[in-house]
Image (cartoon, rainbow, N blue to C red; front, side, top):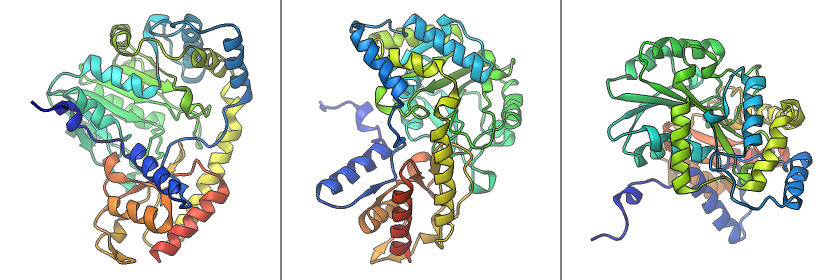
Length: 394
């Protein structure tokens, strides 16, 4: 009898976390690694949020919280959904979890049965496929290219649907491409989905506020999609609160209650202090963190101008999040500094070992021709990192 389950033996390690661990290991050996692999803002959590956490500690918030979140936090989430997304939810439709990743795991756990297909436009966030596989579902990849800004068309969606299709998962703004679906583009997808009323949508909007082109659009805004959409969000990215681990969903009540039940058996309620701080974060207008978004846009323009100066890097202009996703297939089959580059994984490892810059290969995101580069780093680090990359590949 084998020690470990087939489930864990068949599961891939998170590529982003694996690259971050490798970078830490090399730093431990004294190497000057510039980390552009993790999706983590380099800003500190704003003081008004930290002050709220300190107040919660002083007010002795130290007991188990309700499994699906404090009532006043759920009310803050409801207000936020109405204010920012024109979405109306009731408290029984909201579940607060330990990060948006747990929200996704809950959703898969309560909705995906063995053999159910989940459509994922490529590139997709690295953990989507394995969360679905963990629940015996089948990820169905819909390939997109840099020419379409890595966005799935209605025709592609229609072609991917089969009698086994249960869900579609996507993020907008997208991790890793930074692409944003406009309201018109979402409507085009919705026009396909309304013909298939048994298909549910997971709309991952964790990068909602990191948007350089205008108003964010949500799939659930469409009246004919509201009852078939689960909106996932959280405070990690826009509020620089990655380690606070608070995510939440707005969903049809039956799905929300099921996620509450699932969470009650696995982790129970999210961290009580982080929840209290999140109330303060969400009650403030998004303009309170606009300074971060403004800086990310400056960095985006900087990194694009530097990458476009390197032969072999093909980029588009990401409209949100804090990643670029260049096509680097130009280097496949070439030998750089004695190392044969067969794929994006080889190229990403080459950059780590030769340029001392950590990136993530695109294969883990469903697109093997690209690498993901995070620009959630200082302008000085970005300039130095791209200089090193240029020297390594020249």
